[in-house]
Image (cartoon, rainbow, N blue to C red; front, side, top):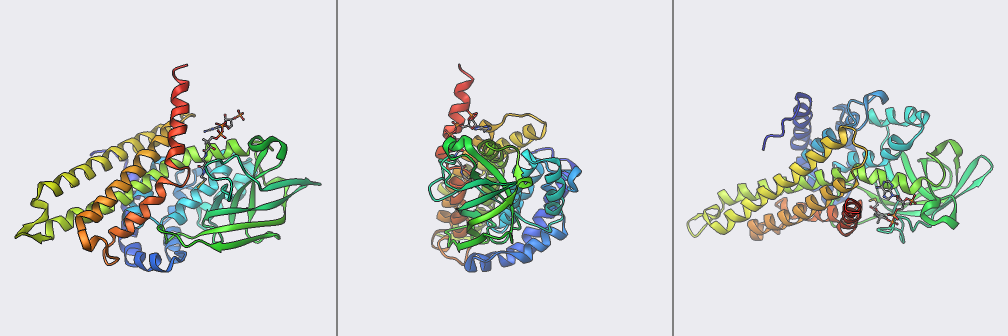
Length: 382
Ligand code: COS
């Protein structure tokens, strides 16, 4: 399919593919096995200006465009769904600042993200606030000019490795979700520590940790937007970042499909390549069609978002829903085409299948995406 990428987009696609093939492919199994944070690859992203693509030019970045970030995410995920998340998680973590931060906050933090000096992380989820993001229990109570933050955040991508955290907590417990606010908390702040590192099924080249806040003093200037705006900031952030989860899913699916197609031409059974069987051909045809359909949806949405359209919650949720369900199906089918070999760690498709699963869950389960789509589309038929 021809997507008429600009010269710059073609260039960043090629850079991301080269990094994925030359730097990430040789180490992906090691990171999957060890579940360590890929600092050596972060260094490569830094040197090749990939972090700068996350950030608009006015804050020392080179793009900030959803389409550009989607292209990079897809290429990195084609080789490894986990390692690229050091970048994706940083994008998610910085969006509250980009979307609702003051000019001062943007000038202070975004250039540090653009040059790769500091990674970011988004801290919304808690043990009892997952799909029900408004059910936060962390509190940030006013004390003079500061806030005192107490609570525990769960499953935070880049947790412990990032320097800048956008953290959601209730500044008014009586108002529930409408009493939530968002703060910038820097690593090293007294009262801010890290809990256990999670042992995950997939995306093991990305680190996920608990964040613990115990009487952590946050200065007033680290409040993003106004008190009580936290839930809205979280929703806007997720609207903006869900197409990136979709791009990750497309990349994973593309990688698995390529492995399966290649294998089907080489694997001889009953005296002929298995690709000569219509059963296998139909699986490959469905994979390729579904990947392309997801890509078309995501690129179209990304271009719409980059054009300045203000409301895209529905389209953004559609991207994540469609692409992640597609990736799960494609990766399961890829394992099936490789048969017993597909089930072995020696081949990359079992990892791709494990990596794909999270895309149906994080940044809102696909059941939540359907709710978001339905509530938005029903408004159109009032
Ligand atoms: N943009 C801006 N504002 C939004 C919004 C959006 N996309 N979605 C909701 N809001 C606002 C609403 O307008 C409403 O504002 P008022 O208080 O002024 O009326 C407020 O937020 C509450 O909205 P709503 O009643 O729809 O919230 P719910 O508690 O029903 O929750 C869902 C809505 C389920 C969509 C939300 O909780 C959600 O997205 N959950 C999934 C969270 C998630 O993705 N977690 C993963 C964490 S990151 S890995």
